[in-house]
Amino acid sequence: MKPPSTTLTAQELEIMKIVWRLEKATVRAVYEALLERRKIAYTTVMTMMKILEQKKYLSKSRDEKAFVYTPSAPRNQVIRGMVREFVDRVFNGAAEPLVAHLVEDRKLSQKDLREIARMIRASAEGSKK
Amino acid sequence: MKPPSTTLTAQELEIMKIVWRLEKATVRAVYEALLERRKIAYTTVMTMMKILEQKKYLSKSRDEKAFVYTPSAPRNQVIRGMVREFVDRVFNGAAEPLVAHLVEDRKLSQKDLREIARMIRASAEGSKK
DNA sequence: CGCTTCGTACTAACTTATTAGTATGAAGCC
DNA sequence: GGCTTCATACTAATAAGTTAGTACGAAGCG
Image (cartoon, rainbow over all chains, first blue to last red; front, side):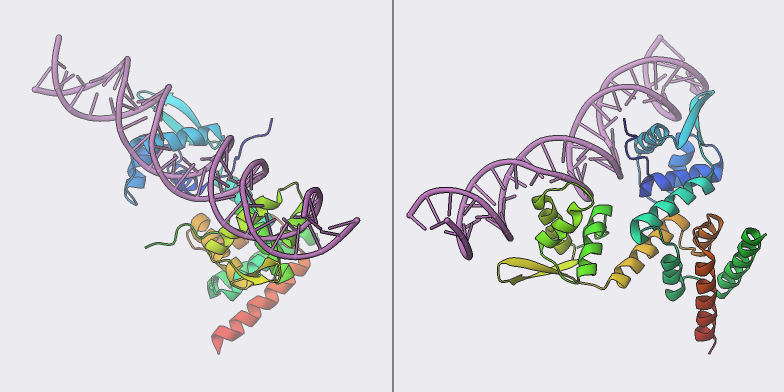
């Protein structure tokens, strides 16, 4: 009785990004957005979106001619889940080493660093009070 | 002429974590370490380690009776690659939103936050000079 | 020496992911 | 009305990942 898989694969995430951006989209709209990046068949997109519906990331409703898909959960919530899963899988749940990697790898600009420092202060305030 | 796949899957990473910890290991050693967590067959571990050798994450050398596997690359380097891939795939290369999620999700303790602040200062020093 | 243990190589079964083709029906145009 | 367009449902082919069984040789033991 286990829910099978449920995590977003790389290509599923690509599609979700598009639907989040458009807020709602038909298969055709997603197909055309994807075409700008790579060759893909219309039916392939349809299959993927059907899977995303099964996985509960999208829900569909009929509108005139074609189905319109909308995200079942906000982007932030889903991404947060992916970050959690990644931190658990790679760092056994410890987030600090991940940030250490980002800092060492110069993935963060000076502006980013200032922004993070600001968030840290805000977070410290929030949990102090 | 492209190298097929090359990324570490979840179970491959589990094995790599063990080998990194032991520094070098036979199939049996990894098998026994894995058994503490879950039921798995000896030959399954062997197959996985053979795949890891093909993917160039492990290299083997004969020692007395059995093969001894050693990591081909240091842990930090491989993990850094995984972080990069994740940041690219999920955040289109932007690391700052990832940290924002960690902060919002309270994944970082006060101690972590202080440590990160320290790293940020060190990084600022390093790039300033 | 014959039997058990340990190790490797090879093979296999099953699952999930990825991509796309075919069939079919509704809608619109000339 | 017949042809093209667009949409869905169903089917399929391939690849990758996961797990493990079988065959077989070497080593050690009683």
